[in-house]
Structures are given as C-alpha cells and as structure tokens.
Amino acid sequence: MPHGYWGKVLFVDLSTGRVEVEHPPEAVYRSYLGGYGLGVHVLYERVPAGADPLGPENVLGFLPGLLTGSGAPFSGRFMVVARSPLTGAWGDANCGGNFGPALRGAGYDGLFVTGASERPTYLYVDDEHVELRDAADLWGLDTVETEQALRERLGSDVRVACIGPAGEQRSLLAGIVNDGGRIAARCGLGAVMGAKRLKAVVARGKARPPLADPQGFKQATADYRRLFRRRPSPWSRRVPTLFRRLLPLLRRLGIRPSGGPVQMVIDSFRIYGTAAGTAALVELGDAPVRNWTGIGPRDFPLDRSARLSDDGVVQHNLRAYGCHSCPVACGAIVRLPDGGTGHKPEYETLAAFGPLVLNDDLAVVMRCNEICNRAGLDTISVGVAVAFALECAERGWLPPDLAGELDLQWGDGQAIVELTRRIAARRPGLGAWLADGVLRAAARLGPEAREVAMHAGGQELPMHRGVYEPGVALGYAVDPAPGRHSATLSGMADLAPFAPYLALHGLRPPGRYDYEAKGRAFGVIIPLLRAYDSLGLCHFALQMGEPPFLDWLNAATGWGVDEAEFLVIGRRIQHLRHAFNRREGLPDRFPLPARERGDPPQEEGPTAGVTLDVESMVEAYFKTLSTESLTRDA
Ligand code: SF4
Image 1 (spheres, rainbow, N blue to C red):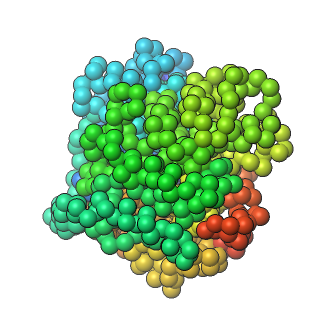
Image 2 (image 1 turned 45 degrees about the horizontal axis):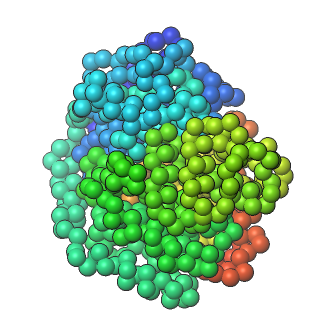
Image 3 (image 1 turned 60 degrees about the vertical axis):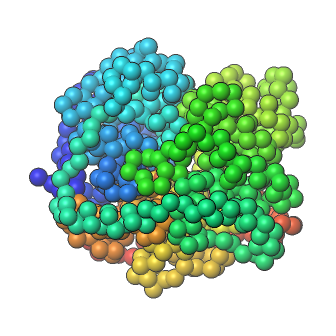
C-alpha cells in the first residue's frame, strides 16, 4: 500500500464510455509528484503530436497535487492540463476551492478524459462509482446554476468543476469553475471541455491516503499553523492607508516594496486578499494602464486606484471565503451591485477591468467579474481583450458596425460591461471576435492591430509589467504555457523559501535589473515552482513564512526527498513541458509585445527609461535549466 498517494489514476473515454483505472508505479510519483508533473508525464505519452486541441485526441486531465486534501495548510489546489487551444502549446491552469480535495477524497490521484461525447454529459466520481450521466438539461446553464443544480440533485457534499456557456461555445478564453467563482482560468481549457461536451465533473469524497509518518506530519503541520493563530491586529487595517501616503515617496526613490513582516503579510491576506495592492501596483508601475500605454501616477492617479484597492474593495464583503485547508481565507463572498452575491474580485481582475481600461468604478469591475465567473471566462484575458478593443476603436481600426451601437470609450463603464457581456455570449460581431482572444482578433483587423494586441504566444498578458519586475516578463516568454504571471510568482525572486534552492547553486536573489543573474535565478525558481505546484499548495503560502512542504511530503510518503532532489523533480517537469512544445514545432521562447519590453521606453513615470534585456534573461534561464544535471532522473 503506497503512502501519501493512492496509486490510482482514472481514465475515461467519452467516445466509448470506457472507464479504466491505472496504477502507476512509485517511481512515477517520486519523479513527477501529482498535478502538473503527473499531468505532463501522462499527456506527453498520450496526446499525439499535432493533435487538434479541440479534437477528441486531446486529453484533458484534472489533477490534485500530491498533498491536495492531505490536511496540510494551503493544500486545496487542483490543476487542469491539455494541449491549449488558445496557444497551441502545452496548456495548464491551477485552481483553488474544494473540488481538488473531493476528487482526491474519492480515491484518485488524477482523472484523464479522452475522446468526445456525442451528447452533453457529466462525469460523476466517488469511491465506488464512476459514471457518465446525461447533462442535456444542464447545457446552457451558467456555472453557478450548474453547480446548484448538481448539488440539489446529488447532495450538498458533492463538489463540481464545470464549464459555463463560454466553454460550451468553445471560447478560447474559457476556463473551468468550481465553488461558483474559483476558476482554472488560463490556456482556454474550458473550450477543450466544451469540445468534449463534458459539462461537469462531480466528485464526492473525503478519504485521505494513509501517511508514512502521521505523527511527523501532524507535528510539521501544527508548528506551521501556529503562525496563523493570532487574530489580525487592529493596526493592520490602517496599513494600506498609511502605505498609500508613502507611495509617491517610494516611487520617487525607486523603491520596490516586497513582503514585510510575516504577520503583517498574513493579516493583509486575511483582511484584503490580493485586493490589498491595487493602488500600490498602479502607482509604482507594475500594473499596466490604458492597454500598456499609460503611466500610473499620471493616467490613473491614487485617488482613482484607491477605489479599486483594499478598503475600497472589502467594504462589500459579506463573509470570508477560503479554499480547502486554508488558514488565511483570502477570498470573500460579496454583495453584488445589482443584488445577489458572488466572489470578491481579486487583483488581476481589479487591474484588468480597472487601470487597464481606465475605469475606477468598482461596481463595473464587480459586474464584469460576475459575468466572467458565470460564463466561465478568464478575467485576465477578457480584460485585455476589452482594452484592445477600446484602443482599436479610438484609432478607428474597427470596421463599421462591428461593435454595433456600442460607443467604445476608455473608462466608459456601461460600454465595458456590455462588451464583456457580448464576449461571454459570443455575440456575432466584436463579441465573437474577442471571445477567441486578441491574437486572432488582431489577425482579422490587420497589421497595425497586431502591435497593440498584448499577448505571449496567443495568451493575453497578466497585470504585472516586466519593466517593473523583469522576472515576470521572463516567465511570460519562456514558460511552455506562455503569458502566465504564476510561472514566476509575479517575478518575485527574493522570498525566504527560495533561498536554500538558490544557495544550492551559489546564487543569491538577483538585483532588479541584473538581467543575467535574474535569468539564472529563475532557471532555479521556475522549476522549483512547478514541483511546488505539483504538491497542490497555494503560491501565496510562499509569501507567508516558510511552509515546510518538504517535511509534509516526506512525512506523507516516507521518501526522504531533500532540496536537491526536489529541484531535480521540478527540472524534470519543466523539461517535459518544454519537450511537449518542441514536439509541436513550437519555439522555446515566445516573443513579447514591444510595449511589454519597454521598447521604446516610457518617457516619464516610475519605469521611465527601462527597456528590458529579455535576451540575456532567456539565455541565462535556459543555460541554468539545461546545464544542471538531472542527477536522479527516473
Ligand atoms: S490564500 Fe487564498 S487562494 Fe490561497 S489557499 Fe487560501 S483562500 Fe485559497
């Protein structure tokens, strides 16, 4: 009997209805863990080169991490993998909530769906049953309605990962949603699910694989949980206001604040979640403004960005929301401006429907967030698509009648919400064009439009700028799933948990614009993060002290994995993700838009004069990744 994992992976062929359970050997788990790692191991073998991402031969995997549902703090995540229809490259997306632990709790380390169903179907999984069931009556429902209908039918203890109308209509910006608004958003994997006519996966289960060292696991968990016992200090609520006062000074001095005392960071996540930082990130030049042409302090000054930040956002909270096993609960359920409840918008959404489109009305952001959550759409990609349309309209590049009566102006809340609705509904005209992303829309509009389409490899860029933090741009360019800020944890290289891994290679956190050192550091950190992801833990934990993830892994499995081996596992996963793309004839690096590189540089503002040396970072990244030997390769 294995420890720490079940040793069982489920394969369901939607074309034939065949269900099979496979039992990968221990070496596979020790080499790839779970999540992304197990996903790329299986897909590299089973997705034929040249497979149509929306065809039956593409394989869609749902993968809890190796520690998902183990009881370790922050262990609520699952990952979805497939060849991406948005980029044509390796595709994966990471999601919190409660679905991952339920799938693991049903007794499986992963679920892979092949083929395509003729009719709308959902898959039900518990520890005794694996059944394909008719979903004709669910087809057309939004994600919240789908989850409600399935829980009413099957019981409130089931967990549902589903697509909304966007995935059904194969929008390439579609993701897969659980808990009514936590979404595996990136890479267009909701379209893969829609093409398979798989409306939902429903999992029921609370079992946990046996642990090799239950006492050791309990101890490591208890020690770490102590950090989270203290209630937020009353002072913590005043930090954003005080900090905002300091921002102009920090900007003038070129200081990039990073982290802070651990308890302050924990308090901030608890009170505000990622909404804590919108004003700071706009002011300091991290958040893109006006489709990457604006300058934060000039075009979206503090009095505007504050409306989309910290207290401005959480005033609508009704209750805290946390993923499974989270000691922080950084999310919230909020009262929506038009009635009803939904999820609090997080930083990426606040920025994408805020400074990026010059909107400072939180109600507009909340409406767009809810439209996207219910349709099952990626708010980053949709926000970038809206910004692209606003710029094209301003420059007179949209064909007459493409937008109908819609008067597209920067900052016009009504127009922004309406265009988001049209994208969600794939309404013929501009909505349908944008529903497949800015690369394809620009190809229809002509060469000038390509210059203002902000993507890497076809995936819309997130709300962090490389000219502010070059590491994030490196991740956009080199990760096999391009255009992701989570490839590098938004470019942060100076977090305490990374230190031992950098030290193994004689490296230290690099200077902000030391491009070569940055590339080398991320040659270590990117693979490390892929191994960490494959455990099913939340990235935000890495900003809150030093989660003892190796202790948890070893107490769960009994393996005795050390830092060096963990890094080898990460490299193996990253090499295989790169290999997947090479087999498709794709480049190892994806070009970045000139604006993202700072070419030409901005003439004023916090990142004035910065043009990225992407080449040096890319070269150093690949050199570090490829020259380090896989000493314990499987
Ligand atoms: S910190 Fe936030 S995103 Fe991370 S596990 Fe907790 S609730 Fe989920």
